[in-house]
Length: 274
Image (tube, rainbow, N blue to C red; front, side, top):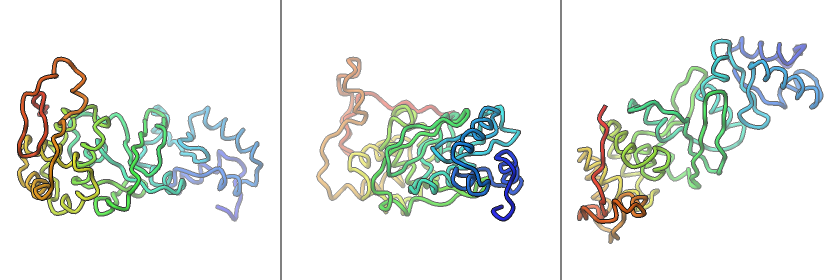
């Protein structure tokens, strides 16, 4: 590609697409084309107007194959690994999207959810919305992250055990405890108890307490026992199962104090078993 210069950005993207590559950077295109920054931006704007390329992050462009033109961009799994590597940031596909990849879809997942070590605003790429969640110490949970093949390569994805812990740690990602519990009901049989135990020191004690209660509720005693054994040597404070419910008058009174997990339950969890 660098030996024979393309005559235009349009032909450059066509050549890339013919080799199975669906992304490029501003710098790489300018080098191959031998064009100025301004000329590149003009050409990119024309292609973007035609729907042929989209820029999910500054300087990073994704080529939209013809079959995805009505969607405005190919699915994020086609380019998320390249985008994060270009940004120089560790990451993994997480939460509801990871649960879906492990067969616990439950409902259609509307967001492509990623955990990384920087606080980033959501990205729109065509009809897709990529949402980022922050965690500083990704090194502490590496045993729960693995590669998963995609149509264009691979991407980093959380294991069922890490996904379960994250669903409790980031309740806003699933829209509340009921939906998180409904997803965990389907995901629980896939959790590796050994790996789950290895991951626990990297999570807040309150996350372990809440996850233990939820796993007990959905009937996964194997994993719940792992969490209970981990907590048994610690002094457990009483915590709210769902802190958001304390501000709602209809749930102001306690309905249960679970002695095993030391969680205050203001209403039963509602599991949607589809």
